[in-house]
Length: 118
Length: 110
Image (cartoon, rainbow over all chains, first blue to last red; front, side):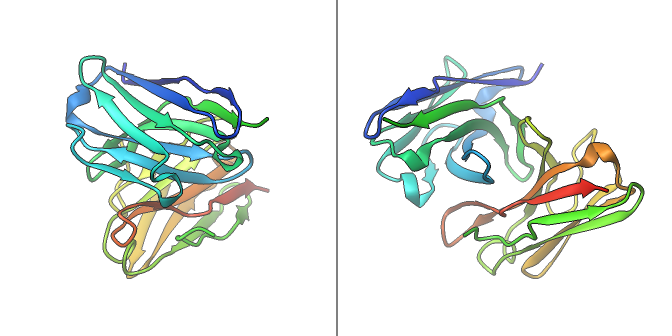
């Protein structure tokens, strides 16, 4: 079964750090770009970051540039989102998605909640 | 303020046709594919339409997409109660070097 499972969310103080993980299974992970999308409580979807198949290309939304880093580990079939200098406005459910070139985000995880609050 | 503009809501009686618009610019919809995602209450989003008008396997053919210039639209013909949820358009934006989503449209079956 093709599946993405996120983990690592939780409560963190403003200015803190957190690393999200997304474990992929059921498909050849190395063949696909991967993306993180977030959704603040009661709000719409916001693209956060994308990484290409071998990790050589990374793209970020302006609001997280310099604070978040997307990476991947081929051996662990996982993609990560390292988040630093967290702000209240980063509070959201973070979804991991498979980014199938020309098809869009065709597989989504269940999401992991990040709450930034003192 | 989202880069792609969608109406906040749309509604219809069961069986009716409902359309949702998505307005962008030359740097996103005007130069790249449009995608549509459906998010049912309490669930993760799901890909509904890709490459402007293609349906992934398993998506009913009552969902259809189209694009013209810098605008796109999603049509639901034969609205069902189980279609109720939020619908988002998305596209790659060449100026921003990233994906952009619409603000979302909440669809209600009256």
